[in-house]
Amino acid sequence: MISWSTDELRPHERFDHWCEVRARNLFGVTISLASEERLSFRGRFAAIAAGDATLSEMRASAYRVARSEADIARTPSDALCLYEQVGGASWFDSRGGGEFVIPAGRLAISHTERPYRTEPTTARGFDLRILKIPLAGREDLAGPARGLHSTLITHDPRLAVVLSAAFSHFRAAAAEGTGEDAGAAVDHLARLALMAHGRLGRGAPESRAALRYGFFGAARAIMMRDLRRPDLSPQRIAGELGISLRQVHLLFEPTGLSFSRTVLALRLAEARRMLTERPARSVTEIAFDCGFDSLSTFYRAFRQAHGMTATDMRVAAALSA
Image (tube, rainbow, N blue to C red; front, side, top):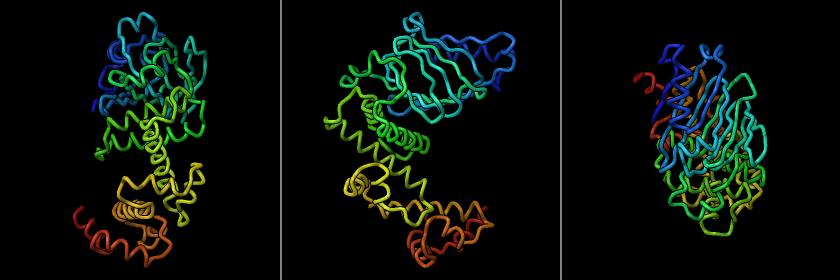
Protein backbone atom coordinates (compact mmCIF):
# COMPACT_ATOMS: atom_id res chain seq x y z
CA MET A 1 0.00 0.00 0.00
CA ILE A 2 1.17 3.52 -0.82
CA SER A 3 0.22 6.34 1.55
CA TRP A 4 1.46 9.91 1.29
CA SER A 5 0.59 13.38 2.57
CA THR A 6 1.75 16.89 1.66
CA ASP A 7 2.35 17.40 5.39
CA GLU A 8 5.75 15.83 4.72
CA LEU A 9 6.72 18.89 2.62
CA ARG A 10 7.17 22.58 3.31
CA PRO A 11 4.10 24.67 2.37
CA HIS A 12 5.66 26.34 -0.69
CA GLU A 13 6.65 22.91 -2.13
CA ARG A 14 3.34 21.11 -1.69
CA PHE A 15 1.32 22.03 -4.75
CA ASP A 16 4.26 21.82 -7.17
CA HIS A 17 5.10 18.32 -5.91
CA TRP A 18 1.44 17.27 -6.10
CA CYS A 19 1.20 18.73 -9.61
CA GLU A 20 4.20 16.82 -10.96
CA VAL A 21 4.26 13.55 -9.02
CA ARG A 22 0.61 12.84 -8.20
CA ALA A 23 -1.25 14.55 -11.02
CA ARG A 24 1.02 14.50 -14.07
CA ASN A 25 2.87 11.21 -13.54
CA LEU A 26 0.35 9.13 -11.61
CA PHE A 27 -3.02 10.22 -12.98
CA GLY A 28 -1.87 11.65 -16.31
CA VAL A 29 -3.67 14.96 -15.83
CA THR A 30 -2.80 18.64 -15.80
CA ILE A 31 -3.84 20.64 -12.74
CA SER A 32 -3.88 24.34 -11.92
CA LEU A 33 -4.37 26.56 -8.90
CA ALA A 34 -4.05 30.32 -8.40
CA SER A 35 -0.64 31.22 -7.00
CA GLU A 36 -2.12 32.97 -3.96
CA GLU A 37 -3.92 29.74 -2.96
CA ARG A 38 -0.93 27.41 -3.23
CA LEU A 39 0.56 28.03 0.22
CA SER A 40 -2.62 26.72 1.85
CA PHE A 41 -2.82 23.62 -0.37
CA ARG A 42 -2.93 20.23 1.36
CA GLY A 43 -3.52 16.73 0.09
CA ARG A 44 -3.53 13.07 1.14
CA PHE A 45 -3.30 10.09 -1.16
CA ALA A 46 -3.38 6.32 -0.67
CA ALA A 47 -3.41 3.43 -3.13
CA ILE A 48 -3.60 -0.33 -2.86
CA ALA A 49 -3.28 -3.05 -5.49
CA ALA A 50 -6.34 -5.26 -5.96
CA GLY A 51 -5.57 -7.95 -8.49
CA ASP A 52 -4.34 -6.06 -11.53
CA ALA A 53 -6.43 -3.00 -10.62
CA THR A 54 -5.54 -0.06 -8.39
CA LEU A 55 -7.82 1.37 -5.73
CA SER A 56 -6.93 4.98 -4.86
CA GLU A 57 -8.29 7.35 -2.25
CA MET A 58 -7.63 11.08 -2.31
CA ARG A 59 -8.47 14.10 -0.22
CA ALA A 60 -7.12 17.46 -1.28
CA SER A 61 -7.80 21.17 -1.40
CA ALA A 62 -9.74 22.30 -4.45
CA TYR A 63 -7.98 22.86 -7.79
CA ARG A 64 -8.80 22.48 -11.49
CA VAL A 65 -8.10 19.25 -13.35
CA ALA A 66 -7.95 18.51 -17.07
CA ARG A 67 -7.06 15.39 -19.03
CA SER A 68 -6.49 16.71 -22.52
CA GLU A 69 -5.67 14.94 -25.76
CA ALA A 70 -2.04 15.88 -25.10
CA ASP A 71 -2.19 14.30 -21.64
CA ILE A 72 -3.69 11.14 -23.14
CA ALA A 73 -0.95 10.94 -25.75
CA ARG A 74 1.73 11.48 -23.08
CA THR A 75 0.34 8.93 -20.58
CA PRO A 76 -1.94 6.46 -22.41
CA SER A 77 -3.89 4.15 -20.13
CA ASP A 78 -6.44 1.75 -21.55
CA ALA A 79 -8.56 1.27 -18.43
CA LEU A 80 -12.07 1.52 -17.08
CA CYS A 81 -12.39 3.87 -14.11
CA LEU A 82 -15.04 3.63 -11.42
CA TYR A 83 -15.20 6.92 -9.54
CA GLU A 84 -16.92 7.36 -6.14
CA GLN A 85 -17.59 10.80 -4.69
CA VAL A 86 -17.08 10.27 -0.95
CA GLY A 87 -17.83 13.79 0.29
CA GLY A 88 -18.68 17.17 -1.17
CA ALA A 89 -19.45 17.27 -4.89
CA SER A 90 -17.55 17.70 -8.17
CA TRP A 91 -18.35 19.24 -11.53
CA PHE A 92 -17.35 17.37 -14.69
CA ASP A 93 -17.14 18.42 -18.31
CA SER A 94 -16.71 15.18 -20.21
CA ARG A 95 -16.49 16.97 -23.55
CA GLY A 96 -18.36 14.46 -25.72
CA GLY A 97 -20.62 13.39 -22.86
CA GLY A 98 -21.63 16.83 -21.60
CA GLU A 99 -21.48 18.39 -18.14
CA PHE A 100 -22.72 16.97 -14.84
CA VAL A 101 -22.23 17.26 -11.07
CA ILE A 102 -21.57 14.14 -9.00
CA PRO A 103 -22.83 14.46 -5.41
CA ALA A 104 -21.55 12.58 -2.37
CA GLY A 105 -22.34 8.88 -2.41
CA ARG A 106 -22.76 8.61 -6.17
CA LEU A 107 -20.70 6.73 -8.74
CA ALA A 108 -19.42 7.72 -12.17
CA ILE A 109 -17.69 5.70 -14.87
CA SER A 110 -15.28 6.51 -17.68
CA HIS A 111 -12.64 5.20 -20.07
CA THR A 112 -9.22 6.70 -19.41
CA GLU A 113 -8.64 7.60 -23.07
CA ARG A 114 -11.37 10.25 -23.16
CA PRO A 115 -10.66 13.90 -22.26
CA TYR A 116 -12.46 15.64 -19.40
CA ARG A 117 -12.28 18.54 -16.97
CA THR A 118 -13.29 18.51 -13.32
CA GLU A 119 -13.12 20.53 -10.12
CA PRO A 120 -14.86 20.41 -6.72
CA THR A 121 -17.97 22.51 -6.22
CA THR A 122 -17.74 22.73 -2.41
CA ALA A 123 -15.20 23.95 0.13
CA ARG A 124 -14.51 20.32 1.05
CA GLY A 125 -12.29 20.03 -2.05
CA PHE A 126 -11.52 16.60 -3.49
CA ASP A 127 -12.79 13.62 -1.50
CA LEU A 128 -12.95 10.60 -3.75
CA ARG A 129 -12.08 6.99 -4.54
CA ILE A 130 -11.09 5.63 -7.93
CA LEU A 131 -10.85 2.01 -9.01
CA LYS A 132 -8.74 1.80 -12.16
CA ILE A 133 -9.32 -1.48 -14.03
CA PRO A 134 -6.97 -2.32 -16.94
CA LEU A 135 -8.81 -3.60 -20.01
CA ALA A 136 -5.88 -5.72 -21.20
CA GLY A 137 -6.98 -9.34 -20.90
CA ARG A 138 -10.64 -8.30 -20.63
CA GLU A 139 -11.48 -8.20 -24.30
CA ASP A 140 -15.17 -8.91 -23.74
CA LEU A 141 -15.33 -5.71 -21.64
CA ALA A 142 -13.05 -3.59 -23.82
CA GLY A 143 -15.67 -2.99 -26.52
CA PRO A 144 -18.36 -1.68 -24.15
CA ALA A 145 -15.82 0.29 -22.08
CA ARG A 146 -13.70 1.99 -24.73
CA GLY A 147 -14.97 5.35 -25.85
CA LEU A 148 -17.00 5.81 -22.67
CA HIS A 149 -16.97 9.47 -21.64
CA SER A 150 -17.10 10.41 -17.95
CA THR A 151 -20.71 10.07 -16.87
CA LEU A 152 -22.92 9.35 -13.88
CA ILE A 153 -24.23 5.80 -13.61
CA THR A 154 -27.96 6.40 -14.03
CA HIS A 155 -29.27 3.89 -16.60
CA ASP A 156 -30.43 1.34 -14.00
CA PRO A 157 -30.92 2.99 -10.56
CA ARG A 158 -31.50 -0.30 -8.72
CA LEU A 159 -28.35 -1.85 -10.14
CA ALA A 160 -26.43 1.35 -9.36
CA VAL A 161 -27.36 0.87 -5.68
CA VAL A 162 -26.22 -2.76 -5.85
CA LEU A 163 -22.96 -1.66 -7.48
CA SER A 164 -22.34 0.89 -4.72
CA ALA A 165 -22.85 -1.76 -2.03
CA ALA A 166 -20.61 -4.22 -3.89
CA PHE A 167 -17.92 -1.54 -4.19
CA SER A 168 -18.08 -0.96 -0.42
CA HIS A 169 -17.80 -4.71 0.21
CA PHE A 170 -14.82 -4.88 -2.18
CA ARG A 171 -13.04 -1.98 -0.45
CA ALA A 172 -13.48 -3.54 2.98
CA ALA A 173 -12.20 -6.92 1.77
CA ALA A 174 -9.18 -5.30 0.11
CA ALA A 175 -8.33 -3.27 3.22
CA GLU A 176 -8.76 -6.18 5.64
CA GLY A 177 -7.09 -8.82 3.48
CA THR A 178 -9.99 -11.24 3.92
CA GLY A 179 -8.70 -13.64 1.29
CA GLU A 180 -11.34 -12.71 -1.26
CA ASP A 181 -10.20 -13.30 -4.86
CA ALA A 182 -9.39 -9.70 -5.78
CA GLY A 183 -9.03 -10.43 -9.49
CA ALA A 184 -12.48 -12.02 -9.69
CA ALA A 185 -13.98 -9.20 -7.60
CA VAL A 186 -12.50 -6.58 -9.95
CA ASP A 187 -13.99 -8.38 -12.96
CA HIS A 188 -17.38 -8.49 -11.25
CA LEU A 189 -17.27 -4.76 -10.45
CA ALA A 190 -16.35 -3.87 -14.03
CA ARG A 191 -19.25 -5.92 -15.37
CA LEU A 192 -21.68 -4.51 -12.81
CA ALA A 193 -20.66 -0.95 -13.70
CA LEU A 194 -21.13 -1.56 -17.42
CA MET A 195 -24.46 -3.32 -16.84
CA ALA A 196 -25.67 -0.50 -14.57
CA HIS A 197 -24.76 1.94 -17.32
CA GLY A 198 -26.58 -0.08 -19.97
CA ARG A 199 -23.50 -1.05 -21.97
CA LEU A 200 -23.37 -4.77 -21.15
CA GLY A 201 -26.05 -7.44 -21.20
CA ARG A 202 -26.98 -9.70 -18.29
CA GLY A 203 -27.33 -13.02 -20.10
CA ALA A 204 -23.73 -14.25 -20.17
CA PRO A 205 -22.54 -16.53 -17.34
CA GLU A 206 -19.92 -13.94 -16.37
CA SER A 207 -22.62 -11.27 -16.07
CA ARG A 208 -24.82 -13.51 -13.93
CA ALA A 209 -21.83 -14.21 -11.65
CA ALA A 210 -21.24 -10.46 -11.35
CA LEU A 211 -24.88 -9.92 -10.42
CA ARG A 212 -24.61 -12.57 -7.69
CA TYR A 213 -21.49 -10.85 -6.36
CA GLY A 214 -23.25 -7.49 -6.40
CA PHE A 215 -26.44 -8.64 -4.73
CA PHE A 216 -24.42 -10.51 -2.09
CA GLY A 217 -22.53 -7.29 -1.30
CA ALA A 218 -25.83 -5.41 -1.11
CA ALA A 219 -27.32 -8.05 1.18
CA ARG A 220 -24.28 -7.85 3.47
CA ALA A 221 -24.58 -4.06 3.54
CA ILE A 222 -28.21 -4.31 4.68
CA MET A 223 -27.17 -6.87 7.30
CA MET A 224 -24.53 -4.53 8.73
CA ARG A 225 -26.91 -1.57 8.66
CA ASP A 226 -29.72 -3.43 10.43
CA LEU A 227 -27.66 -5.80 12.59
CA ARG A 228 -29.14 -4.37 15.79
CA ARG A 229 -32.71 -5.06 14.66
CA PRO A 230 -34.08 -8.38 15.99
CA ASP A 231 -36.46 -8.51 12.99
CA LEU A 232 -33.60 -8.67 10.47
CA SER A 233 -34.71 -11.43 8.11
CA PRO A 234 -34.17 -12.75 4.58
CA GLN A 235 -37.70 -11.58 3.77
CA ARG A 236 -36.78 -7.97 4.58
CA ILE A 237 -33.64 -8.14 2.46
CA ALA A 238 -35.49 -9.77 -0.44
CA GLY A 239 -38.07 -6.99 -0.35
CA GLU A 240 -35.47 -4.22 -0.24
CA LEU A 241 -33.38 -5.69 -3.07
CA GLY A 242 -36.36 -6.64 -5.21
CA ILE A 243 -35.40 -10.31 -5.48
CA SER A 244 -37.06 -13.53 -4.34
CA LEU A 245 -36.59 -15.16 -0.95
CA ARG A 246 -35.02 -18.16 -2.68
CA GLN A 247 -32.50 -15.88 -4.42
CA VAL A 248 -31.46 -14.39 -1.06
CA HIS A 249 -30.71 -17.86 0.32
CA LEU A 250 -28.82 -18.79 -2.86
CA LEU A 251 -26.56 -15.76 -2.44
CA PHE A 252 -25.16 -17.24 0.78
CA GLU A 253 -24.72 -20.84 -0.40
CA PRO A 254 -21.15 -20.35 -1.75
CA THR A 255 -20.00 -18.99 1.64
CA GLY A 256 -20.82 -22.23 3.44
CA LEU A 257 -22.96 -20.30 5.93
CA SER A 258 -26.71 -19.88 5.77
CA PHE A 259 -28.33 -16.46 6.08
CA SER A 260 -29.16 -17.02 9.76
CA ARG A 261 -25.67 -18.30 10.61
CA THR A 262 -24.12 -15.30 8.84
CA VAL A 263 -26.25 -12.90 10.89
CA LEU A 264 -25.34 -14.76 14.08
CA ALA A 265 -21.60 -14.63 13.27
CA LEU A 266 -21.78 -10.89 12.55
CA ARG A 267 -23.68 -10.21 15.78
CA LEU A 268 -21.23 -12.24 17.86
CA ALA A 269 -18.27 -10.45 16.27
CA GLU A 270 -19.84 -7.07 17.04
CA ALA A 271 -20.60 -8.17 20.61
CA ARG A 272 -17.02 -9.29 21.12
CA ARG A 273 -15.74 -5.95 19.83
CA MET A 274 -18.05 -3.98 22.12
CA LEU A 275 -17.15 -6.10 25.15
CA THR A 276 -13.48 -5.14 24.83
CA GLU A 277 -13.85 -1.58 23.53
CA ARG A 278 -16.75 -0.37 25.70
CA PRO A 279 -16.13 -1.58 29.26
CA ALA A 280 -18.75 0.79 30.69
CA ARG A 281 -21.56 -0.97 28.81
CA SER A 282 -23.21 -3.92 30.54
CA VAL A 283 -23.34 -7.34 28.92
CA THR A 284 -27.12 -7.05 28.76
CA GLU A 285 -26.97 -3.72 26.90
CA ILE A 286 -24.44 -5.10 24.43
CA ALA A 287 -26.49 -8.24 23.76
CA PHE A 288 -29.61 -6.26 22.90
CA ASP A 289 -27.65 -3.61 20.97
CA CYS A 290 -26.29 -6.38 18.75
CA GLY A 291 -29.78 -7.58 17.82
CA PHE A 292 -30.22 -10.56 20.14
CA ASP A 293 -33.85 -10.89 21.22
CA SER A 294 -33.07 -12.66 24.51
CA LEU A 295 -30.17 -12.93 26.95
CA SER A 296 -30.37 -16.71 27.04
CA THR A 297 -29.90 -16.90 23.26
CA PHE A 298 -26.92 -14.54 23.48
CA TYR A 299 -25.24 -16.40 26.37
CA ARG A 300 -25.64 -19.78 24.69
CA ALA A 301 -24.42 -18.61 21.27
CA PHE A 302 -21.46 -16.70 22.75
CA ARG A 303 -20.25 -19.66 24.81
CA GLN A 304 -20.58 -22.01 21.83
CA ALA A 305 -18.62 -19.64 19.60
CA HIS A 306 -15.84 -18.60 22.01
CA GLY A 307 -15.68 -21.32 24.66
CA MET A 308 -16.24 -18.86 27.49
CA THR A 309 -18.87 -16.48 28.77
CA ALA A 310 -19.06 -12.86 27.67
CA THR A 311 -18.09 -11.74 31.19
CA ASP A 312 -15.03 -14.04 31.20
CA MET A 313 -13.94 -12.66 27.84
CA ARG A 314 -14.24 -9.10 29.09
CA VAL A 315 -12.10 -9.95 32.15
CA ALA A 316 -9.50 -11.70 30.01
CA ALA A 317 -9.31 -8.72 27.66
CA ALA A 318 -8.84 -6.33 30.58
CA LEU A 319 -6.06 -8.43 32.09
CA SER A 320 -4.17 -8.65 28.79
CA ALA A 321 -4.47 -4.91 28.05
